[in-house]
Length: 286
Image (cartoon, rainbow, N blue to C red; front, side, top):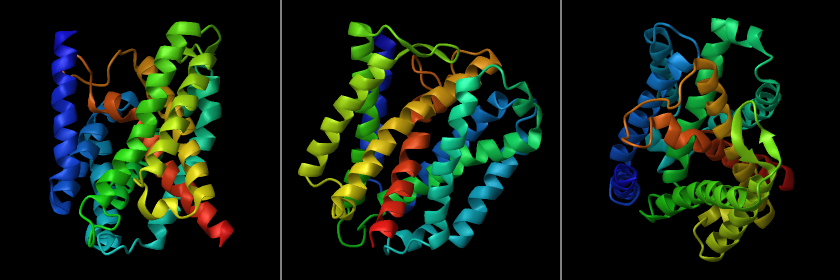
């Protein structure tokens, strides 16, 4: 327990420094480090006996993304349209992945196609990387902390959902959600997490942490609810991959807390889904 507390304290301090002190180039380097560590842990979970082909694919994908959407554009509030479409693609990806998670372990053919796993892995990681960069860059030229607060506010939704689900599940949880994937998750916990996260969404919006994303209240609300719900799927997706690989943690980089994927699994879905839904609602309402 002591190790977990120390590690968590250090992680919180590092994340806050990364968000609120680091200049944008340093933040981007940190985001790339998270991306690279996650790719390194994800490769074995996808069934690759040799990590390097997938790591090379992940590096090429990030390089292409940076070539066609240099992060310097984001700090000028210029997000290329294809990046928005990537967020929408990620939203559909997570929608299509849900039946796969629910059907586990009765989808063996899905895991026997290396090409599919390459695409699967990149759709898990690349939208998350770009979402980090887009959210942190929000109003960067005029307000250094605005994007940091925005990114933190979206992350807090996930943490609130996770905490609410944990305590509600322990208190009144009875009905298993998807026991073959995550035996400890319950429907009651899901509802409790959703309730707490919605309260957090309302409070953070009242405090003005969502910047320009709060101008359209309907778009913000739908995007926030989507981020909360899909964050649970992100957690379930990693649990499914770990069960298939027969391991408890994705890595050992954080003593007492597992690997990088164990720390960001919910955020992998929440951040791009938030941006994808907000983009769609803005387009529909306009």
